[in-house]
Image (cartoon, rainbow, N blue to C red):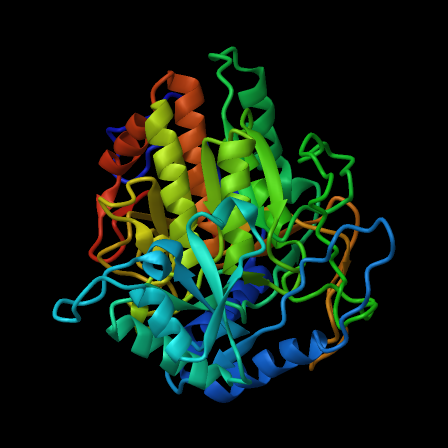
Amino acid sequence: MPFNQEITGDPFHGDFHDWYGDGPRDPLAAAVQSEVDQLINLRFQPDVRHDYLRLLQGRRAQLAEPRPGDPPAVITPFDFLPVGVGFDTLLVPGQLLITRQSYDGSHGPAGLGAPYRYGQDVVAGFGLEPREVDCRALRDRVLRLVPTRPMGSQELADAARALRALGLDVSLCYITTLAGVVKPPPHKVASGAAVKPALLVEEARLADGGPDRPVKVAVIDTGIAAEIRTDGWLAEVPRAGNIDPLDAFPLPNGDGFLDFAAGHGTFVAGLVREVAPKAEIAVYQASDSDGIAKEETVACAMIRAVIEDGAQIVNLSLGCQTQDNMPPIAIQAALESITEWARERDRDILVVAAAGNSGDATPSWPAAFSSPTFPTVVSVAGLTPKVQPAPWSTRGYWVTCSTIGQGLLSTYVQGQDPPQPNGPGQVFGPDSWAVWSGTSFAAPQIAGALARRYQDEGISLRDALSGLLAAGRPISGFGRAVKILPGI
């Protein structure tokens, strides 16, 4: 069905039917409601958050040496700055980041006399030394600062704040989590009748003789499952170097159960495919299977996806809150590189980012980059299945749009959840489907909608975004609300 801009808030009216049909759904609906209740309450439960974060730290305690020929593991030790109400700041210990321009600048504040190496001298005075960042694509914009003596995370955070007060662009090196690190696990859905509507939508769309216009969507996440599903879903997505290990933790050999964010990238990619069956999807592993990613790793993957591999849309179902709500330096540098590269070549690039699950208006990055400075960024908040503001979703003036983020159906992975207090964890077999909630799963619907409009209507990505927003219903703090896939 053509894009429908007349039905406010439902731009694809008629294309996406309720996947659960007319059958009973009370047990699954109750499980989803329990999941979103956990998201709502988590910001008021510091003991729960901190115990969980310490568990994650412990699962990384034994770093294994990679075997010859194995790719380097995406595993990042981390620390956190605890808070009472809200969400804790996660960081890479023992380092700060500084823009190269700030470090190399020769002019200090007015009144200090002749120009001198202000940034370098101030940094040295704090007992910090420069090092190159691991990502070569960022080295012309970002430097790492390491202390010349042991410094705890709080002392590093204090140093970063003091250096910013002295006019330098300095920040902690942040950990970006999958839109809320303590995300409840997904819920199993029976294959067959439950997913038939989604399959019929794909078959109809692929059979439609619309314009054959390529578009590439990059999903930067946990990677994708090695499994090639017999139902054909995501079979064409390249696997090389970007496999979600599913069971890497606790190190060194896992424990036989799915890790806490296992399957996240596979689930996100499935949502893009549901909305945009003709789009090319590429999945990049930047986060580990517990949901932890260093911002530098994410930034490097963004540059690779767009500048090296030609992606036009990037989906980031991850984010972080920061000290003093300042932007993370590595991700900002990646956005600057992508924006400049696209401008020089007159290309449209859109970066679609999940707003977060904090239930407040605290900026979550990279979604909060959405602004006239970075018009490439589209930030996406979450709605309930009735297309109302979800109380667990982050919101704010910087949110571009929102869509249903509760009880979404998508592709999942094989494995077994860890034991639960009331019994064994769920077992997911081949060709699994599941439902999951969070802004992680609102964002890929928008990414898919943009890809679909671009392909079907032969318009620019900018026009695809403008039309999607025009069809949306304005909600304060949630941008323009649009209904795409149904939730439960």
